[in-house]
Image 1 (spheres, rainbow, N blue to C red):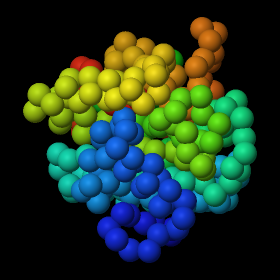
Image 2: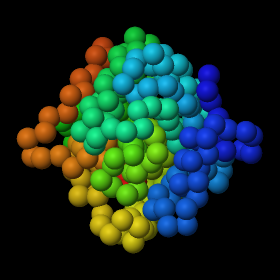
Image 3: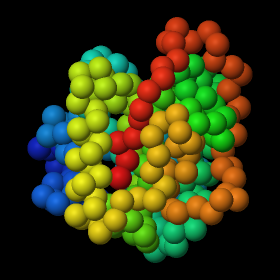
Amino acid sequence: MNLVTNEGQQTQPCVEELFHLIANSGYPCIGAKAAMARHQLQCFVATDIRCPHDDAAIVRFLYEFVDRFREGQSSVWSAAVIFESPQELSEDNFDCYLWNRLQALADIDAMNFPYDARVSSDATASDFGFSIKSEALYVIGLHPASSRKARHFSHPAIVFNPHQQFEWLRSTGKYDSMKRAVRRRDLEYAGSVNPMLADFGVSSEATQYSGKQYGNNWKCPFVSNHQGHDDHPAAKWSGVFTEER
């Protein structure tokens, strides 16, 4: 597996580019900076975001990431899947490829695990979350053509962040201040705050994943094929969630 972290070992150029982006003093995502500082930003380099060739390997990578996160307790973790190509694509193209890959990953996961019961599997629901190995993950897309400066990266990439870590931040009283700081830094970095932002439970977070600004008639193409999640031991939570920028 093309698994790397930022613990000082030799890494592939696209991973180094991601670390460099996050290390930029003006970069607004405090969570990504914290994960990198703790060596808890895990990266996987895949070939082509348009192709299903690496889907099974990506799922294995995410399963291992979820295990590490669960063992790590209340700390900030992120998993980034960086695709080597294409490096030239439109925002519409990236949006399509992102949802194709998420659908493919979810279909593989549906054969192995139930959906995380703490979130809805309905992409139109206000409490929707993407689930892998019964762990709700918030998705952030990065790519060269992004209209959001904080989402602009040399390669297509999909970053996964566990919902639960933001619940831990809320439980310690740190979440709201972190959210305000991220939005303030985004305003300084990009000149505006992402218009698709909404707190968890207000509207579906699916509208925030790719970074594209959707119209009112947009319909998320994602459909979960999991067989149900009522037997998941975790209880649903209620509260605020948005670490996105």
